[in-house]
Length: 459
Image (cartoon, rainbow, N blue to C red):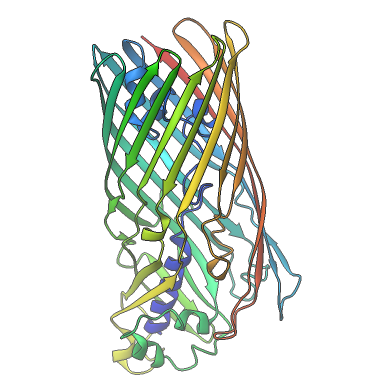
């Protein structure tokens, strides 16, 4: 029984670890100014969202203080369809269609030095399917996933000369995850790491069980049952080639997060036939990837600015597989899983992911219609990093193209509102399933409509 739980735990982690946003696990843009321009952000002043985009652009702000308060909504529309027997044609629509992300930042420029602090949600969403769908049928409860990643950022920028600014930041990073998942016993067993197989083999009948579950969830949009914290950093520059043209570049390090853990009895495991246990889930080495890129902005006329970025996201290094463990708390009823030695200890699992690295192109323009009003347009294009063979309906991070619009309105000389709306066109992808263990083919359709709103005050 304990072993069953272990397997379940593992599967859960594997499926849950792929944080789901829009450029893989990243948002297509941070801050409504940059998002309205397709996410292009590396070579012009886009407010305190620079702490996430390119900290060197903080050096482009005016002398004094700036306070930004923002809220964003990520709105995925996900439908999964069974594409093979025994459930061909059955559909499941996720009710997880709104994930809210707050942000706040303050910076001060004093002479050539700019410094401050910002806190934002870097990525977060999930899926939520009813228990009557083919994804959870017969397991007695819905299936859902939710993961959030946030940062507390301490930036510093310095104007080396009137044309050159450099910047960097130290980031305190946290990650939180909930998961409620059903899978077959055969699927769970196939994930057991070499050396742990004897534990799985000691669970009579698990491989033939029609379903098994792992559940750890606190149902909050802002916390998760499994948690981790760690550090990361960024470096960047901007250089004014002439008064109209600026280039910029940035490097974001891979995070150094601790293993993500629930409490010692913060997860539950059940399986068809009576297995039941509680214990601790540990997600091993869940990290956010390194990113680097270059951008340019051109002030074509006093009213029109055009910006473009290209960046590389290193998913392949951090998304080769999900490694996880389940440690039993020893709460299962005596005799539920055979000899006592079978019902204790830890089981390790690994779930292949094999994501590809991603190249993202962003292009946007900003046009000042009149003194208070600015309009923005943009496009964000990337390739889908997830191979069809590892696509999972709980985390279909498969978006490729985003089309954005934005508005900026000056409330006064010292305050303004900025808004961005982003639409990601539908992407369809099918996991063909597998013969061993038997896994039904699943087709996923995913589109998004998202927005960001920000109030800014300068003083």
